[in-house]
Length: 335
Length: 296
Image: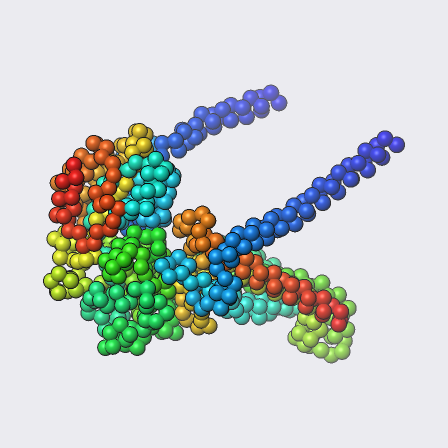
């Protein structure tokens, strides 16, 4: 009897000693949430970082949408917010009320792609006016067929797919196309999860959707990309790495950001992660089909980070159709 | 004498404990109702009952919010209807086969397999409907949308068959043997006996099985959230995307509606609608069983 108890106690003690690392590991955690567009980039960086750290630091990345991410960020629930648009005035106010200071860091560029089903034979390009007609609030319940947008198109139901109201992509698209952020019709299939949108557009020949270019690149065979007529030049432009970089894909190119809670930087794991992020996002962004910023932009971002420069360069407003050079100038001047 | 008193005390204690457990479930149900009702009360102060029941669009999260519950109710009823069309006849037929016709070995094999159907996680069913059944159906019905009501409806039906067949079979097996024997003695075939004698005798049990099936179908969340789509629309067309009450609640909960806003309260409005629908069906079942029992 005594021997049995002894061996059980020994086994238990061994178990506790072995399991202790598992108990202590969750303390070192970096919590990130926000845009589903920025998610693939942040997730790629997080994976490489955790591999390099051999599991010593855990990084969790959520996809509540840019709006949802900021809500959590300004409540202090996350260390970093992914955002596909700059922080808005009312979000800045909430953060200020809660005493949260943030460092705004541009990390990559994105082209917002408009997608249709490969069986869609009637669409060769779209103008901003076409898109406005499809998506503005006044079309809710009224513009339900393709031929109501352009009479030459077929008399088929118009099935729309797009991100929901919590998404930065939604905010940017409505600002760029309809003219006012968040001004959109409500009767479409809304989802913050871009994979659901891919599935929806790929499954229905009368469908049209919009999301980050990277999600098109990952699903090339199932979707058809639509050239957008640039309001500046009147020419059709297909979104690609090239056209987003040189600014010809207009107005649906936009910078992507991460916002870092200044207080969280006191935690060494968060500081290490952000440093790693800025050093590696240039090459990782390209791997996940996003447009990396030029090296000078990353240098300026590093300076913002090391100098703990808080506040936003955009004054709480959306800026539509910003080219990479403009972003650099903005970064450069607001020292 | 002393140990008899101790025994009586023990019995009383165990009785009290069991009563507590029973009361606990009543208490939990009442709490759910109270929470749903109080939050919905807040909702109805901002949205009129008239708009809730007569408006034909449901777009509470957008710039021009509309709060008509009918599209979500239509979505729920459509998918439930399709599921029940599959599950109720098939479930009943399986029960008839298992209780009246099946040889012993067949029962031993079929019953566990049916239970397996019930054990598959609903999220797996959802992706099965989206990625396997929908493309297959699209080959026969070219107009079928990627997200539609037909595919999850069928899968839900298959999922519910075990519930319906198991309870129905128990009800039919409980019919006394002499009623069956009387029927055979009159010259009836097994099939005639099954449908004309056994099923009417077991009616209250079968009605209970049907009510279980209906409640399960109305309350099903994952399958419809994944495969039915995210666009509420007031339609009876199963080839179109729809959104059910349950899938809508998931959508808002996964997003980030700030506490206390109308968008947040829509969760409870949808919840109480769902609750009332299920309650209605349960009451109907209860009334039906009482009535049939009387006649019989």
